[in-house]
Length: 168
Image (cartoon, rainbow, N blue to C red; front, side, top):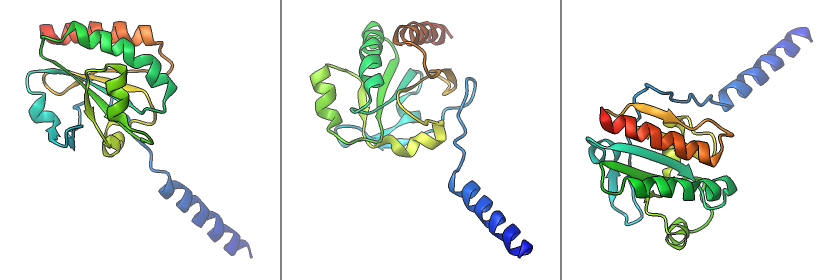
């Protein structure tokens, strides 16, 4: 009876641990994982190829996310500041239930929309929305949004990090 109890506990422990893969977050200084996904026009976007000599901002979001709806206008203001500079903004749409193309058009966002970006969540350690990364010209992560950071703090931090990355 005791052996069966231990065996049952070991099985439960194994199933619990194997069923909940830990998502390892990438951190500042890490290389940003490459990805190739379709943009809103159905064209393949190869992150490494398309971001050569550019600073890149990745915004993980979804139309249903109230925090994304609050943050994205602040990031659009930052995108507007760098419109004529080598900076790219990607809206990485994840866990979607609605029409992200229509949402972005109605909101007036100019970010390049990458639909169905769920496959990049694990390599980037994304657990929820919004998640924001700034990646320098060498594909190194130079900023990662900390949860519960205010929209204004994110806006200021992203702008500062972009400025610094452009000077390198």
